Length: 89
Image 1 (cartoon, rainbow, N blue to C red):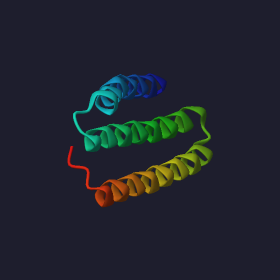
Image 2 (cartoon, helix red, strand yellow; image 1 turned 90 degrees about the vertical axis):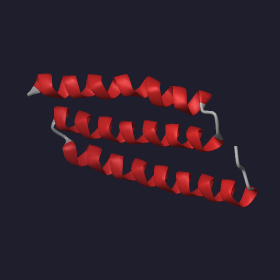
Image 3 (tube, rainbow, N blue to C red; image 1 turned 45 degrees about the vertical axis):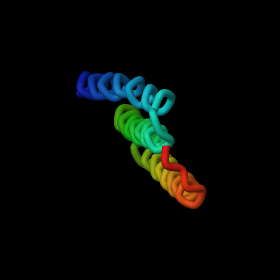
Image 4 (tube, rainbow, N blue to C red; image 1 turned 180 degrees about the vertical axis):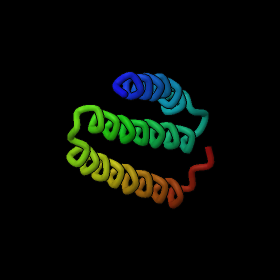
């Protein structure tokens, strides 16, 4: 079972550079926002997997809920700001 967790962690970690590239080199502001949201969602998955590996799943799920809520509020705030600013890039 431990090999499964390590394989899942490795698979998720290989996705980070793809989203980081999208966040840095995105042709538009919205592509950068999608890249940042992808990084945040993969971080939440990492927290849950680490919690399952260490046997303290309850604590890590609470942390992932908090991080997910911060990600949601931040994405909504940035989206609303860009909507009112009128960015079409």
